[in-house]
Image (tube, rainbow over all chains, first blue to last red; front, side):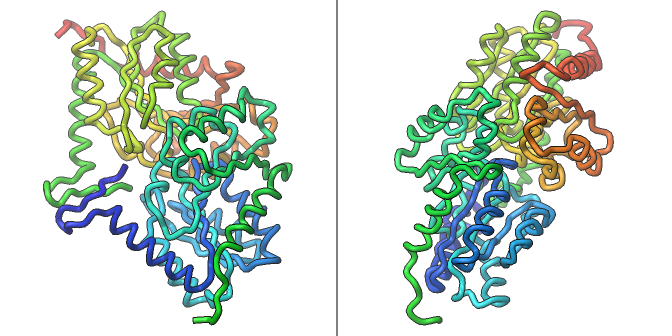
Length: 231
Length: 231
């Protein structure tokens, strides 16, 4: 955990972050946008899952991406190929997005586009299985990814992320045959910590399981009330 | 990056951490111990590399492990099977070991064992490709692990870890045939950031490359002056 209390300013940094997240969410709600926050270790496959999601869903709903990376726009550039607005945020030395950084992204969404026309904002967080889980950014749901190569014990060893997740994608299922991994053991370890999480095993390579993920995303978008009047 | 300045206490937390790391290193130097700090994303294979290392080297040198995990002693228990002292540190919500936590481990090493009889302390850090790189713990060298499943771009996207590393193990080489991964591209990306790092591709599963890793460890231990007198 990070230093969470700034004694000089007399503020609890996590509380301040939470207040910012609530403001971000209010913006999304006003615009009728659903926001999902994707989090995982580096290399678990967030960007490729976003690529598949944009390819499949951007015809039926209007999507923007807020792309968090410490440095580079490598991932942002990959996603721009799908013809959606991608707002890149370089976090510098910060190991997670916070609500203030995402507020900057929302500001750009508001001023460079008409935010009321969007249905879905996908936030790709910095690759880190620990810290992003503690910093809400204004999302309506948290999506954690765990690749089959990371091992069955990770939900027990990094419980905060798995506790917070609304949906867990078990990624790289195509590699499972080459590993000593028991998917049901991963699921059981996650359920110990978070009995209600939706667990979806997927492979971006073969496409297996992706339909269920797309349907989960569609459900989240459907749950957000449509704007009566643009405002 | 974490909050690095505590205004109330008037201290720079990274500087305070560094002072603690220097004290830890002085202890290791006094006892003729080499300390290596292993860092990576969760699931890159730190624990299994330590298992192979203990199995191969603990007959010829006296090794202790300081095992950092947010929760559980799962990894510590795996390593205890190899008959070496394993000092477990649960970091709670903290996403990295710091020098104060490791000082606690050193205190136990000093009081529960004779530290002058040890040659090597292996520190397994919390699984996180970002924050542990900023918090020195008193090590003589930093070892980063990157598994082939994590992608070629990671050195560019998470540069601090790769900048700081003295040795990079590219792990899970046995999975490379099932991935679209170019190992020479990983190496080139790492060299952009850190031209002098030792890069060793390994597979804990097949044993490929491990001999070179063991020899690198032996070299680090040989570089530490042997104690003239127990003190």
